[in-house]
Length: 331
Image (tube, rainbow, N blue to C red; front, top):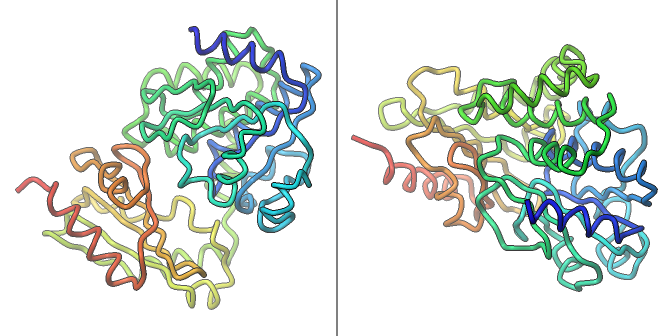
């Protein structure tokens, strides 16, 4: 409770607030940002969201304005020089790791303003002067909702829609192992406050572009099973993106497709990036701790969902991950 009070005090003393989150922004990240922007603006604060990668189109319904993207709309040098303004508080949501904040980490390290972290991951670089971290929460949106309750801030329909999106996104519409009764209670309250579940479901799960659908087909064509069909690997090359016309953000949640195979306990998706690194996303049904695997490569996440960046080529990256998975698999 002390951390909640410290967070409220920090916000009360601030007038110009920046909201930021991890690269490859997902539903939980944008949901937290949208909800906090709405509430803090109502409190009379000037609020600026900054994304570190483009917002996937299926989350655009949560925001009624375009959010600048670092490296696209302004350079890291412009940010460092105050090109986006000066702030007396920076709020980081859904991450507590420098590795998840590329190009923004140098700005944070200047210590120009106090930092408030709101997160639910175990991985931590202790970025915040004040931190509200609950690793038992299925989503950072659950933690933000707890802050709203503590502070007695109103939950408008727009805020409810944003936090509902965050929770349902991070739980895979309640089918991931992190789903618990707390998620259902939170979503019940948010539905009563004005969230529209059918609209959220349509936007997240039924709004593929043809390009994204073709990218999924390319990924499925690369599917391989290992260790008696207990581990699935898939990959996407730079050529796949050129051929399909899809974007990097179109990869979100595609890794979950191979988990339809009943024997698969662990899955990995490898994506070839423009800078020659390999982005690896990992999922587990619980017995294998993929956060521990990701951490060995400077990444992080949860026991059942994590990610890291690996050196190219694809074969090398896959072998590194398969070796780590093998060491945790039970006979």
